Length: 368
Image: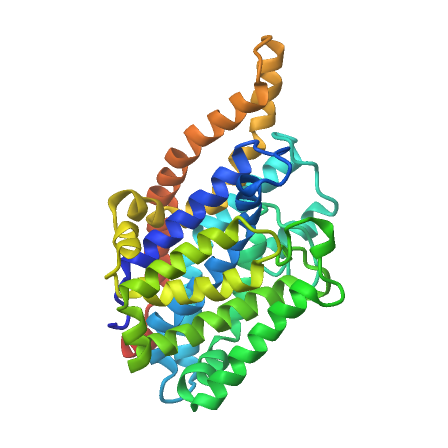
């Protein structure tokens, strides 16, 4: 795997996960008495764990060379500059839109208390660190936790990639222990729902930070395995990829299986990297690649669009149309993908290029 080169199958995997999230939030399929379909949809929060795993894997792939020899402030700021250029332009625009929607009740969102302070926390992406404030754009909570992990990236990549095997094993063990505590330990949320174990996104006691840290670290360890000889043998095995795919799909339909699903997803990322098996080739298809390219925009946009479905629902009721909720969900599904693509084209890509030019300088040239 060449550093800095895109891995198409992982792009497609992000697209599938983002579409999974959108479908769940828009389609009203509750009340099915916890049959496998509802349990499958109820596990949608694990898409966020997949995003964290992918983030750790891709960050290692793209930026490990900056810290391979030694940690310098120049390369550290290069790394942070590139991450800011990647995530902040679209995040900033949608956070401001969400703030206006909250402030003027333009959707079903309720006005937020201490709006000025909440906006400030959101703009600095620290709102979900220790319960500081709510995320104005709800999916922004995961960006807040990822930003915290980005700040720790040089230390994490050093312990997982550049030290001995024992260090990587310890880091993986710590990550798995954290996930076990989140699932089954004191303070876990597994009693709140018949299927939820890892659905820890609220910033109480920094649990969402722990969740992101654990998943991200497993992604880093997974990258180390993928670059080792044994990892290459496993990754190129079509049978392993098929078995992982089948097991993940089965467990998604079974209650209280979050931890094994996350571990299997880490293995699936490894096998997808080489793009040999049929599941990997499906992820390289044009629809999956399209969804993957706009996945970040899709993920951040869908809750704001979904917040407008209540207005559509009420309007449908005024007109006397039946199934107003379904009409609102269909309208949201229809417009979310074009809006996300438009934001990708006019905000995300141009904003990334502009900030890259702003941050470019001698350290960036040296790092490249």
